[in-house]
Length: 271
Ligand code: ATP
Image 1 (cartoon, helix red, strand yellow):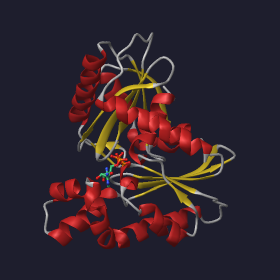
Image 2: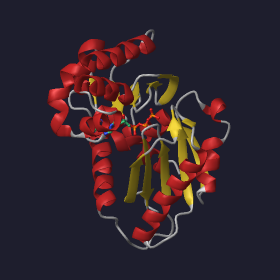
Image 3: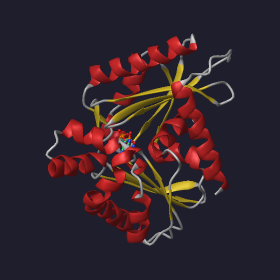
């Protein structure tokens, strides 16, 4: 509980500096870059590893961890870098990035090339659950990252990731359900879903997909003693998603105040 409190404070600090960057003289800055299916996030920490700035954009340059629009990805990361550099009046040099679990061989160095082509020196490339756990600091449990295209499940025992899995169900599937039910184009469904005011109304229609995610968690955690599920990723922002997951899996389920920024901040901490 203590570590969740610390994680929430760190995320809250980051949310503040996204709106109002903290400009001061730091000897160096550490940037975490999360290249996601739905969203690209840049988190910047100062020499004391305190959040000082950040920026993010919804984009379609990566699918399930694979860079599908290389030029677009480079331009976007460069754009976010320049945006933060202008705000901080400094140059960002060092960056770390992450890969979804199990995709390192498929990636073939694409993410590394994107980060370097955007003008960063890459200091670390780590897997997403390990990054998220830099903030969550759990020693035993499952980190469940519900992103845009996929749900990543990582089992942590004695502070070490002992199993990772990534399955193709995530926020995009929820948006497709909304698009069908409300006869919205996909983009409008995405925007509608991201507005917390609509969450109570949406939850009954989204329940079957959340139950599917829960059954994926049950499958992937079978044979392990999982005492708690820790939700991260943008889709975990959905109000009461943790209640459904806890009910279906029977495992106590926790989520930070803003699950979307846990992985990018964990990446920055590992820079
Ligand atoms: P992946 O991990 O699958 O590569 P990603 O890294 O882009 O994807 P995230 O940025 O963690 O994933 O999450 C993006 C998803 O979260 C999108 O489907 C988006 O619609 C959803 N999302 C973001 N904010 C909210 C919100 N407030 N409420 C509900 N869903 C949200």
